[in-house]
Length: 317
Image (cartoon, rainbow, N blue to C red; front, side, top):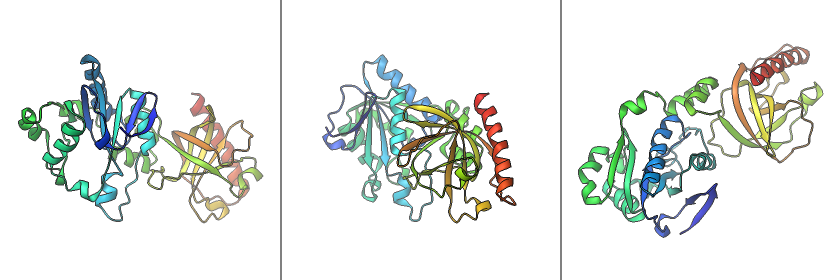
């Protein structure tokens, strides 16, 4: 068995062909981008079932995201990187995360081939749990009805999470992407069941913020596919070196100082340390305002003072 990494007891496998299948695998599969409250309906079901049957919960996911492989010039942005998704799944209590390399060749597998190769032979699945609208195999031809008709032949039990259980929540990854792209952080956070987060490396900037009393850390997010919320100012929490700080963050081109590129800059409150090349995690609480071009630097400074007061009230409230 090839172990890719381990998060809090969850094993991550990147080669199913050498995977020593668990004794009693309770399985679900999907991309699970965001690991939102709708996904958790399914994930908590397999965790509970595994406990009741003295089995192991197994999540099969695909990387890269299928749309990156199947659609050229795809501008899809993801809610979670693979590492973020893995950490969220581990926190829920999943036992195994099986990472299937998604290629054009893999996409040509029929539903029957996928079930036999991955679900039956690879995982020796005892029970498969899927959402009501889940499809799999070439052209998404596989479905719950297909599985149900063939479950005896495959040798595992099949369970579907009903439509009403998912739709009453009204959540989807696409709705979360739309909310973040519109700056509706509160909506995205409700759908996620947590604060939207992104991580990046602190790079040296032009120090304009420091010159007006609002020093900022210029953050570079290495994953180009990670969804960055729309331009504007935000109240945020900043995680660094195991500690949490309050702050306000700006995303945009900084038109007041004639900025030429989109940047992510965070002003961390009550913080005065050199953290170049270190990693920060930003958790978004609320959008403060749109990005604005001010008449001059003094007007920008005056607005930043107001932004800080507003951010503090939000973060302390």
